[in-house]
Length: 243
Image (cartoon, rainbow, N blue to C red; front, side, top):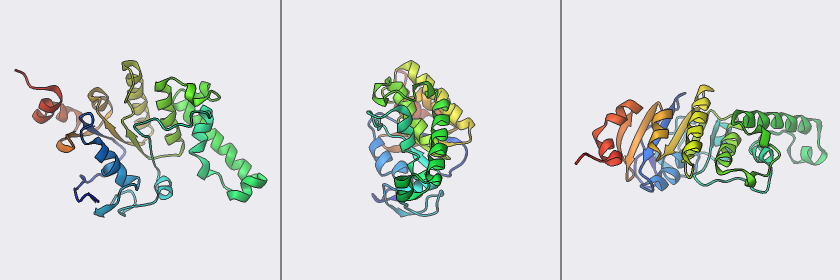
């Protein structure tokens, strides 16, 4: 796969595993998000060569991406801070409610059934991330770590089979980071593929089956967590060499 910049992105197969991209803080991650894997997968960047295995085309619109079972979170929290926790998850399920505009206006039976089904899915997602007790709380009042988990709940509620997480541990304290790693492990147990972009090495090594390591936007290693940890280039770039 090559993006519009003319630079190639490594081929990526969507399998029921967790793939992580480990990159130095602020070193090429913007390109990964906007013009690299995430941008190409969600249709924000235009591919010039190759295909994306999820739909065998270079680019798709946002609604087709969602229908393909792909969902994502962002590096910066993007919640509706004045809405409740439950309402934030329901927003992500709007397209799943049948009936169209007329159904919503007249509150048709199909629309009512769809709303109830969406509510059940939203509650299930909040249960999964341990936020159901906060369902009626205003999202902007949640602690930072809980807001991160709420974003993941909204993404999972869509029924995603491929979840793209853009630096989910950014800004988290050590306790919140540990809880996040546990959550990602539980997501894997559900059979969801996770593509994780992260610079917290401990999180990446704990949750990933395969890791691609970048140094200033250039790939320097790829393999299992154990293989990457032993790689001399990774040790030099991230851990430093002994004097």
